[in-house]
Amino acid sequence: MEPKERLGLLFAGLFALVGTVFIIVAYMNWQSTQRIIKTGIETKGVVVDLRYGRDKKGRTTTAQAPVVEFTTSAGKSITYYSQTYTTPAGFAVGETVTLWYLPDDPQESITLEGTEIWILPAVFGGMGIVFSLIGYPLLIGSLRRVGKADRQPEGV
Image (cartoon, rainbow, N blue to C red):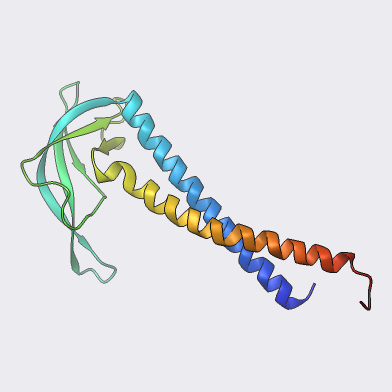
């Protein structure tokens, strides 16, 4: 196999692998969220603050994430700091929102209605599909070319 063929095969394989990993991450996140919604406790919370995001240099951005306070079925008050930053903000301070939590881990296993449910699966799933649609056809084509070259007698 020539270096050019190896490079093409490596490129195609890398795209296919990255696409597959992205799709798996999207699916696992979607499943985790659905598990919390189906088996968790649904309740209402109140948006008490909006936090601004920061870029890699530490500067404040326009993206905002809600801070939600709610009370568990056991009467414990929880403050949830969403990690989903959006522009414009998805919620307003004082707004009542629906959320789900797992009773055995109410501080960590929380899903907030709206963007938080679908944004990561949509982004990773979309990127996974794009990478896979580029990588797999290239990979199959490269493997076919390599297979044909291996079957041809030397000197032809």
